[in-house]
Image (cartoon, rainbow, N blue to C red; front, side):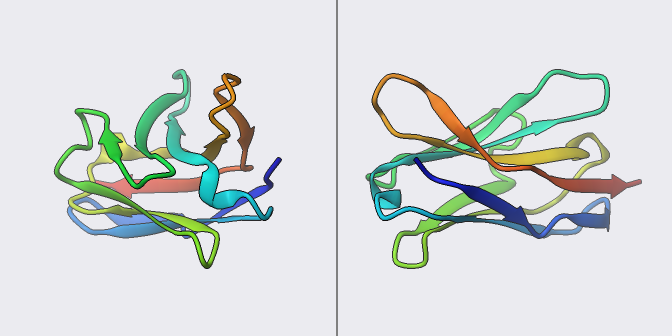
Length: 118
């Protein structure tokens, strides 16, 4: 079980960058795969990026080439670097942890708001 706290959200103009961070508690953080998801107003939550416990990354097509996920197991953090932001990237961004036990993303943070103005 891990607890997650996101930070780094804010209001930015289109084309600019933002870096989100997720701090995790728990001694077994390094064994979790971590993901970022987002939810825009009136829309369902959608996948953004994932980094496995071995460091393998994957991205949704709509952020590929613009966003980069990374992790620091010593600091128990996972980050999402977002470049070339677009207004459609606006939403609440959530960090989530997957223990790999078959339960999927069972642990979620409270979310951080990202707003991209045109």
